[in-house]
Image (cartoon, rainbow over all chains, first blue to last red):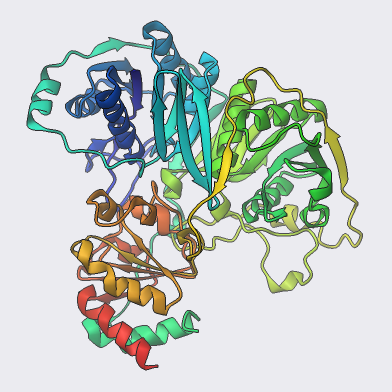
Length: 251
Length: 355
């Protein structure tokens, strides 16, 4: 099975999130970078499928040259090939991103394209679906369970409002996954060494203006305050019980 | 002008999330609000929709669309948008809403803005909007230029407000932030409430639409089956007792379970807990887990990473129990106890049992 996994380099935000002075991006002076948990699971799922059924996992990212760090992370986990669609630092919209991914799929040929359900930063919820439409492939999103039957089809499951939905898709197909589909492994030392030496294929898709244009990012005004401290340790329990009573949760 | 809103049904009534989307749809101004409901004409909750300002309901011919098929739903929305000359097509930002609107975007080649908290027409093909980034921890001001504005509504940021409220003064209409973590956005309230004085509710017209599907639209179609029986669901629980790294390991959750049961709630956990395999992922509260909206979230031994706040920011009240007075969770909590959850929780359980 030839699988393409798409990942995105995003800031690792810990307890706080801030934007740059011009409001154009997240302030990353104090942060590292990673891929979203959904995408970590997409990489793991792809590696598990090829371990069972054979084939190759190719990991792709669209981003600046620094995103090679995230490609190497996936190579260390078992991906065999890496593709960087290099940008000049401008943010690609979902339409241009999908077009660039679809071009790689057409050129190389895959049975399955895996993505995260949504990117951690932009939360556009649409790149996978747009890729599928460009290719004329079926797509299922938000998937929490995946089983391949041979090289013909795949059954994808998710839950919605307490009901399980099962989709059977003929291959080739696009699937977007959510965290929880598996428990990603940690990279092995040999894996890391292999990843360090592995080549990264590059191309540079053209940036295209889209009909949705970001003006500015901002932190919501209401999101910062400080909790009233009721006390320390078990001594604070009587006050806590009083507060719970006031909130009406003791019935 | 017409706007079209996808309405999902929940046990025969419009889903709460869809009512919130309809409230935003109405705020787009002097428009007629049409809704698309995937149900038989006889099952359309017409009165409930009329209460939210809906003038027209479009259903597909009975029997043509069995089971949820996202691309087919999108095809119907796209063709109805063309037929009605709609200037906007929207849905609630549920899994289905985001999915269907993304398909509409792909079918029409138009942009789609997910998780909007505010949308304002700005003449011609222009809409100004505010949308969530980082699951609502950042807001993006953006401009959309398109013949049809496609977007989904961040439901936790928009309160559902009917056109004819039985007691208008009892509740403040508008886009009140219901949560400590998320932003309040207050558009021109008159756009939302202006119809309140209208004494006579116009009748809703139900139109039966003949769905003309394209090849492949029905290839991906859900087979639905009931899952998990009973129990309080994390997403809808009134009280959630959260456990994080401070719980210490897989064996430390019994007191939290006991407390949750006493409060009629459920246990939720932070991402580190599921990544370590201490608890199953379905208990995760967070950006990549479940987003919760309880009356009370009691966060025990949880530092409050952005990833977690994205999931619990919808709680009405947050109380944190943490050994670290500098933990980020305290900037999102209403109350805090500085201390070890292993001492505080058993003492709290004892005090509640003694009542």
